[in-house]
Picture 1 (cartoon, rainbow, N blue to C red):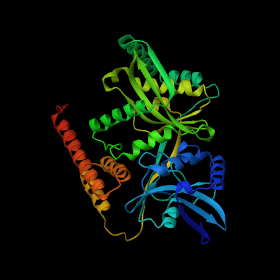
Picture 2: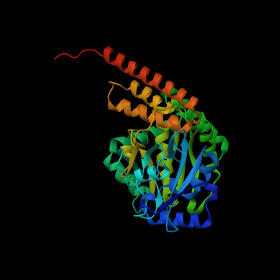
Picture 3: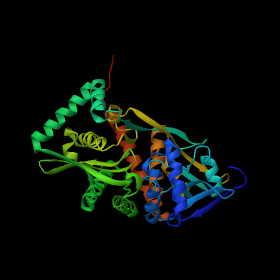
Picture 4: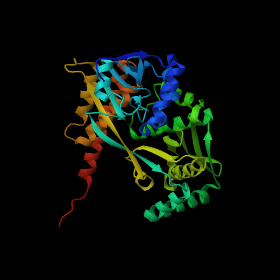
Amino acid sequence: MGDRVETEIIRARDLTAADIADWRAMIASDPALASPYFRPEFTQVAGEISPDAAVAVFRRDGRTLGFFPHQKRGGTIQPLGAPMNDYHGVIARPGDAPCLEGVARSLNAPRLRVGAWVGAAQDGEARETLMVEMPDGGYEPWYAERRRTWSKYYKDKERARRSLEAELGPIRVERGLRDPALLDQLINLKRDQYRRTGRHDIFDCGWTADLLHALMQTRGQDDFGASMAAIWAGGRLTAVEYSLHAGDRYHFWFPVYEPSLARCSPGILLSLDTMRLASAEGYRVFDFGFGGEGYKKYFCNAQQSVREAVVMQPGLAASASEAAVKLLNAAGKRRGERLRQSVRRRWAAIEACEVTPLNRWKGAVEATRTALVKGKDRAAARLAEPAVTG
């Protein structure tokens, strides 16, 4: 970045028309910034709703080099909208963006925590996000190729569709929905899912739900916005998904389905129908975020490299946040790297959602209890397995 680079911290509402024009030119110049999360509209909406939100503006000799939208949680700086922001980094032209570590130095951050950094970085570990890139012909040739490659899987989903219709009645799918009541229904179903699975309820803090509602009412340039798609069978809602979209990019964000109908795969059927409908409207890249769910390997044919990292100032003094991290790490001790990684990510979500030290500590304690219970359950299950002798 060099000694002449200046960093100014402003509110998103204080971005000028010239700033927004620069911003749009920057994302147009770099395909890695194609995600809707990099659009200025996302920052303008999230900047009004997320507590302690700001934008770092990097300049050299009066020329704007880039923008980094972020939020503060205690001594930690995070991407704006975390833990729900699935892509983040410095919005800049190729070659102008500072690296992750340079951003941390410029912001004088005790900690800079990122989960899906796009851009240069030395710290942390590489991760891959998964997506569908449609061929020139759109959905139909993509589906034909996938069905040839994964014949058994797609035949099973075709049977699931027939079963769903036979059991409940005619299937109806709609996308581009922006009904606040339907969004509330989605959020309630998602909160039920978090309770069932022992994950931190990211909607309990309030501002995260407000963000989804506000984005859904936003119509920006180049079709930036948020909407839902839903599938009904016999008039019964079986699955609904909230997505962001901009340009030709469609980002699946919050999916949920009726658990009692899992055997009919309504969520997967909805994703297929959403891609079919949206590709007919010009969308070409459908982003599924990080892997983990088994179905994604049957869908996705492309990926993007991002980085997960925490950059800390040398000699950082102990804090309540660090104590919470140690508590979570203890839950994963001797249980393998995968569990330790899981509890660290749990803490990242808690830290981002909760805006007071007390609530962050309460969340860490609850996440630790859940991790320990799950560990004991897994150990008990292993002990209960019958011995296999040769």
